[in-house]
Amino acid sequence: MAPKTTKPFGDGVDLQPNTCYDVAERGKFYTNEHGEIVHVETESAAQRQTWWDHDGVSPMNPDLKDPLPNATYTVDGKFHYTTDPWGRTVRLQVDRLDVVDDGLRYRSESVQQRIGHYGDGIAKDTYDGGHIAGSQSGGGPEDLNEVPMHKDVNRGTNGTYMDSYKRFEDEIAANPGNYRNIDIRIEYDGPPANADSVNRLSDVDPVDRVPTRFTAEWVDENGALQSQDFDNINP
Image (cartoon, rainbow, N blue to C red):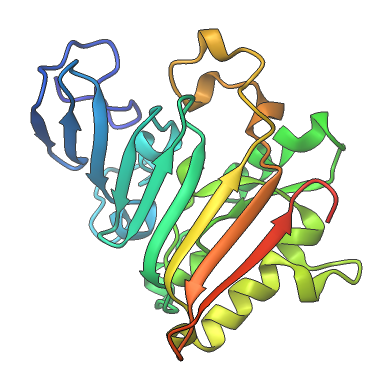
């Protein structure tokens, strides 16, 4: 049942209900009473690169490149993601986001370009592949952690820096203790147009993978709950 290094675990096989599958070099996969994977504990390329030893094969995690619907993912022992019924990431929870050493950062320009182009159906050349958890904090490069993000939101360009996701990330990096119990929710414009034929994220029409809004909540160093919204369509 062990998958190839580039194929997600569980594709094309029947899994036992209420079972934990411990898969070498992948992690743990938990099924529900219907034999569907509903929780995954695994590592992103940011961590996998430290032990990966397969010449010519990227350490990118195929299970995170093509997430399952209605599942939760615990990644690198600290990032907790939730997907919607079509495999789109709708939530990230993390205790805090400290800046990590360069050896625990992993970016993929090809993935960022691909995901950014998913926004071309809304406005051509207007979106980047944006990390929900930034690479400077150890966030992975796979699709679970990247979404089409408006360039002004992602980069803080055109006078938008003060309200941008870029500024949010910069302020966390400068003072991570002031951002604890971080809870980021990602909204979309309803179900995908091809919802009936979607089995996992790769089946979703590209334009329906573009979030409309991000909402971040956190607890500051004084114990007060803070929040900020980011409009991803008209920043």
